[in-house]
Length: 397
View 1: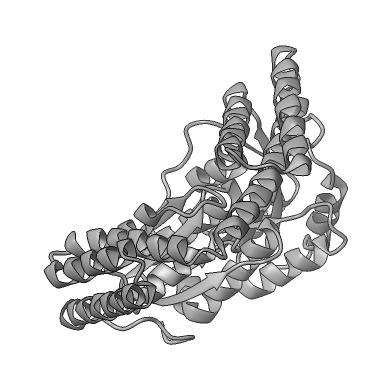
View 2: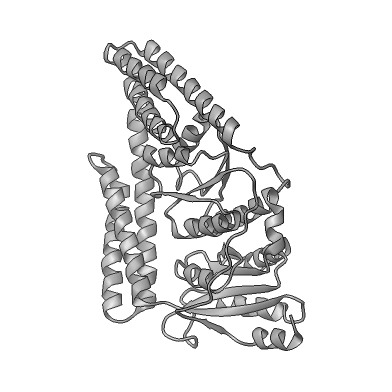
């Protein structure tokens, strides 16, 4: 990169708008089949999308905090050797790992205590398992973890690694340095979400820290440039819709349950959505966006409590646990059938388990279930042995 270009980029704020450069296609970094599983959390799904393009791997998405065996069936249909889960167990419940393990598929989960930590661990995991992917990466885009808008714009503008960072955290500068050292890019974009024009204030706090980072790297060979991304009415409406959907999911999970604190949290979320709509009607996109993401966060806390309460209710019921195992396995069998496998024997075993359950022969039902699991794993392994490669190992690809 020439000195003139470096100087120009270092001192300008790049305005990202509609109609950007078409990105280069993702690089395939593996010989085995990989599937990425992620929740519909904006940051986690953006990380999954970014990594999926780099690895040429399909992404399967589930609703945040919800387990759906149909999603497991979708994964089985793709006959993966290796599944990468992005996000913690609150976002992508542990039941998915259990389903995937039933098939004998290797799993790794990249997760942290929050979306920013999850993003960082995903980048580190990518470096650990697929180091050669980084050989063609020259651009790092850094986005605030609360910003669900900028990823779409940066995806259109550049092909590279995307990382979500908390701009207000005390270790913001250290985390940016760590990412730069890990990826070794030529160009680093740090996005700033703004309301009306590039001259407006940053919607979140932390803009001064971005300026400090830019100044720090001015004399280095790496170009660090702030990028103004303008939020639109459509962006705000999308965030409001997302918050309302999460509220609906929490309400549905609460059906018949009594949890006063969580329900109070849900009521707060509904009020915040109304406040977001009022702010949007007044043309205050920044306030509307902040209220919407706060509402969604509160709805997710309520959803977490509802899921925990529902699991606790049924935890002591042997019959419920057995019925749930059978129902989950039937969906795994649907996925296996869609690969072309003969699942007649497995279906018969599950039918036997249901008959035992109806007669309250719980031990016999569990034996049938265990046998069905073994046959599922054997049939899937035989198909993989004929048609697939081996799961990736650290630093081998």
